[in-house]
Length: 124
Image (cartoon, rainbow, N blue to C red):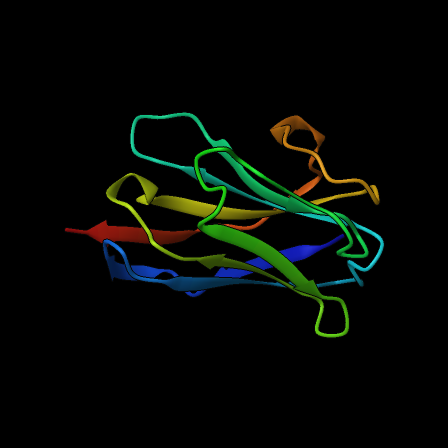
């Protein structure tokens, strides 16, 4: 079993930056692909970013391309989401997820473990 705990959320002004962290425990995630998803009020959970187990390849949603990036530190068993130039529409609960595969995916159903989420609120 893998436990995932997100942190780093909060209130940020539009145009600002925020870095989310996802700390894993229970076992090493070095062989797992990792992803970030988000869910805004009244909307379905959507893909944001994903990274392969080695960190050699990433995948970003079109809506965050050029503004967000995902990275990982397998020694620290942690994954990060760097959010730059945030917009009002980035307001959501952000979830970290682990996939028991080396290959990243943008599909929610392909992830096996989920964190509880961290709230990000962007103000004008």
